[in-house]
Image (cartoon, rainbow, N blue to C red; front, side):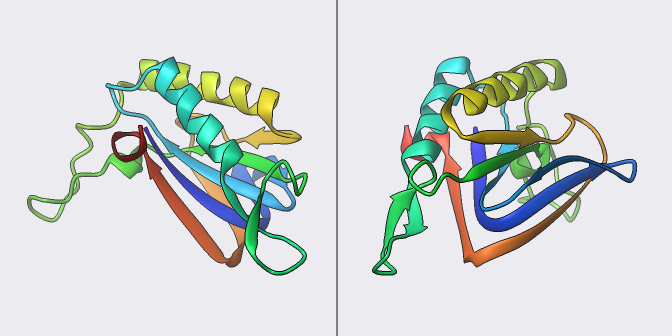
Length: 149
């Protein structure tokens, strides 16, 4: 599983011209699922997201978690995080999860986020989405389950 965390002042996602998810201060999470991923991996990854301390405290030190700043979360599925660009000029996506399995894990991640975070919004799995954000910092972190678990 790969999660790109973008610390944002605001973010939104549209499908067919209609906003389906919108947040204020918090995280935009771009979520990529591989065929090797499980609910156990998803739990560990989301718990890591919840514990990360990448918001500034009153001394301008990167020291606070999303819960401590009462941040919100916008989750967007993005299979392209598993693009393999080693050969040729057209990416291969063979490492991305089977769509049915990936959607099931995406829905599981949404459920876990709703349990852990103050407010969770999301895109629509498999849809052509337009994502807008104001990156705060900019501050972007990439979590890869193969590297952190």
